[in-house]
Length: 363
Image (cartoon, rainbow, N blue to C red; front, side, top):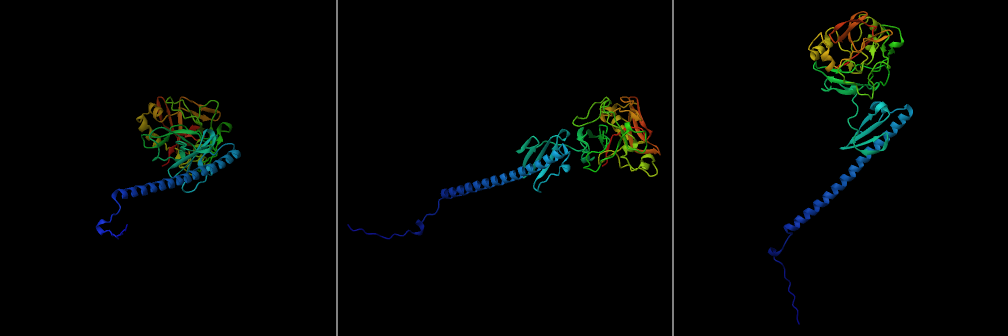
């Protein structure tokens, strides 16, 4: 049989390209491969970020352990801790009660990890709200509701709130005995007034821990409205004014005292008297009354802490409240704000007496 082969060429009109279905399949395959690549890359990147956060936590946990071994406690605040991190990672250090515990949080790239004193393996999560130091508050940032804050010097706790007069007030009497941590440059030197003679020029405070209820950490400040709750400490005027040069403590004119300096935490000060901020407060929360302290008790949480003179410490406690202002009235006297259940007002008081201190935000 004879086979005959013919060379047949396809005409242009008979040639065929990719069909629409084939093109769609190719596009889908490319998209799947791209997605797999992106997912793999993101997974690797996220693991790298997580590793950076956990490594930072582990390194700083070592620093905290060394601090605890040297000092017997963990640092009171983040600046004292000396923590280290790169610019992509932020750290939030939260000390526990008495600085015997801590939680350290590292955040970055949308991730949060934490480490604690009792769990040295970093874990995903946050430490919670943490501590608000009174030194960091201003009138603008002051909460409109009663909020507990901490004095970074000694970890004592206080209520604070912006009241109707527009001022940010402590709602708990000051209970600072001097010394402590100087993170904010507000450490003061005070002398226990119960162990020294009555004096104008020594910055004294008065406290008898066995008989008076004062503010300490971790106890939450009292919110009692009876006036007989946590009384805080009492201070002579020199102590209340932060122990300025002795002449300024004893003599209001030579030299004049610096009214911006006080025993209060940094960013806080004594209120002005002889009208002034105490009077504005009374107008705002007590209707300006001079015959009752009811509004002060319920809004300002006024405490009837009494006064101190020599060995007579906390005299009239539970019946009268006396608070120092920064406004002198004579060489050896300064205005106080006083109140009891049927009266209140402002008058000059001898500077060596021990009165309570309630601070107001400076700005």
